[in-house]
Image 1: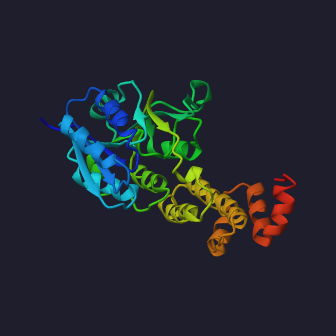
Image 2 (image 1 turned 90 degrees about the vertical axis):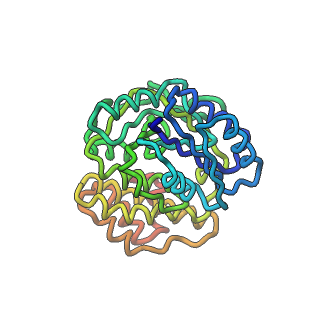
Image 3 (image 1 turned 120 degrees about the horizontal axis):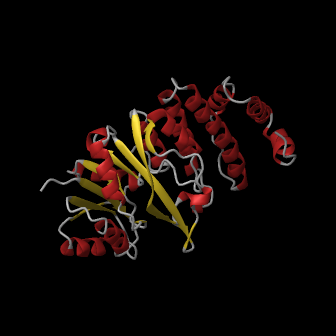
Length: 317
């Protein structure tokens, strides 16, 4: 039997959630399926739970590696996957009851697309943050690849569309040689690299993925400097999207905004600031950035003290 879909699940210290995750994948009703659990050196009982699940479900494969981070775990999963299509699920998340894999599989085999995406829910404190009422300006059906990238740039935790890798189904040949490079903010880098090669994406009007709040994620940790990794990703992305003026503008503007944000957070938490003012000054002068932002960025370049006093406290610009 040909394996249609490989589901790659990196696992780290989530012994109480793995079973729910795997059961939600199996409930999708895809027989030609493999679930690859990559245990990333967990220190709890996750390894034992994974092995037990594998014993009871022949479609589950378990790989154990020393702790190397989610990127290395996903890369190993990609290398071992045999499915015609590949998708990702994080072990502390789960799939909605909607048969999203069946729908995505039907679309990707009938339409001339390499990626199918769907909406996702953010579960926080037992409640869903995303709702139909909050979703705006998201087109469905077949979408131009560049337009889809622009949508992702506008994406956030309230509109059901982000750069996460786990609400998408990919043709195997598209990603089999595209590996995750970073330990942090890995989705932001990998997704843009992959999707920038795609002429068309198909967007489903269905909630298919439930993202749960993770206390161990960078979002819920105090600022430590690991966040600077995102600035390096954006520097690389500038070269990737340089032919598209809108995407380039959004990339450079995001870089400058984060550079400023991280500067003040570094001072707050008494750690070293990100010292790459040369890149900041190059990016802030890009002509397609709106005038207000360019003025704001110039004030920060002149004096972070003046910026804090005039812009942050004065709420100007």
